[in-house]
Length: 571
Image 1 (cartoon, one colour):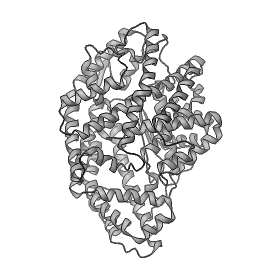
Image 2 (cartoon, helix red, strand yellow):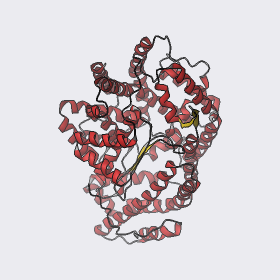
Image 3 (spheres, one colour):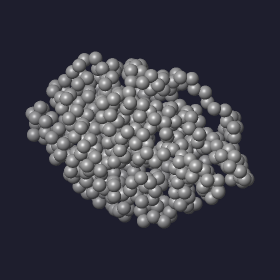
Image 4 (cartoon, helix red, strand yellow):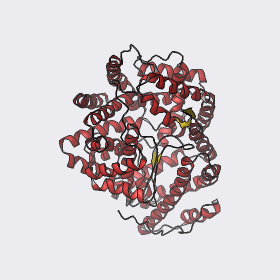
């Protein structure tokens, strides 16, 4: 795939963002420009879009480099400089420009003629509604504080077999058949996590205080209501989230309990210990889909070429451009992400691969996001390429399921392939209670802003009972269960971005179900939906993919029933 970066029409090709003064003239130009014709209005929007893309990409590279090496203080300072010195100065200008856009008579005309502009201007109106000057330094402070989570997590290493290893690497030993190994490693993980309980609590208390002040400044009673508005949740609200929580408790938790009972029977125990949850109950070695990240990459490209050559070309292009950092290593932030680069039009994938099946899932998941970026790279405005997470996660989670028929590339042994598919389908069911629990926890946290740490612990433990199966014995490790929320990156870095995984998972099941009936049609519908970016509403995008934007109890029951039937086929 040949990628040519579009020549800039407004921003200098030689721009170096080393000070606010370097970019202020562009904002002054946009704010003061006379807009007297529709042609001028459209050209103005394109210039705004170009500046947005340049700034977003500059920030993206600072974040990417910092997360690859959290120990390099210069990289951390570069990122901190942008969010503390540049973003706070952009915000007031951005608000004035937004107000100028939505007050223009050309905006009203344009959004009546083209749905994509209605979506764009709707978001701008909401941004204007909740913007407050006094929140600018607070939002900057929140951004700086939240990034400490990645740095703290990257410092969590344990020593095993004479080697210092990351938590991601340590987790692979919890799949070993030898219980002594599992327990030894789990104890080391527990010991290391205990050192940081207070550190993460301190960090979250600070974030909670700042976030609540932001909400109050914007005229909201609590941060939950503010954040849902800031995220642009136009197509559902609090009630739908609460219904989702209740549906998961009544429909999904009992199925997870049955899965765990079956597992307990196989391992000959009445209850699990915390180190018993990931090893194969049939006594088989952990799945090993690849040895090196080079192998992971090569086989992923081969897999995608079998599904759709375009998908393979996307990943191959990223590889050639060195827009991939896949291996787990010391000093690297935890987790995985696909970061869109709006100006170049080619995203960056970051992950921590150590050779597990979970790594394969992550690679395919992030590749789904990457394909989404490629499919939207030629949309007219940057805003059209910035889609809500309910759409973004539909792309990634659908890709996981669509890829399953090609997993024999990683698992030539039929039994390994069966086990991998079983693990995937069970994980779909098992993750939904965790998603709902994290979301309900956040609803409570921010609507009870004066809660104490003890209150927070009690609420989390209450939710553990409601969403758990009661089949794990945490004796002597109760503190790890009480603080298990501290391991969820989203709670610290991107609050309320989590239920989207559950909503999108249901949509992805629908895409996969369609593919089993007519694969070519399902792939085509999937690509068409992703190509829309954010030029239509979420329900319309889902409809283009030939699935419903519906996470009601009735719909959930139907889709989970389908998954359980498919699970029976691979047992």
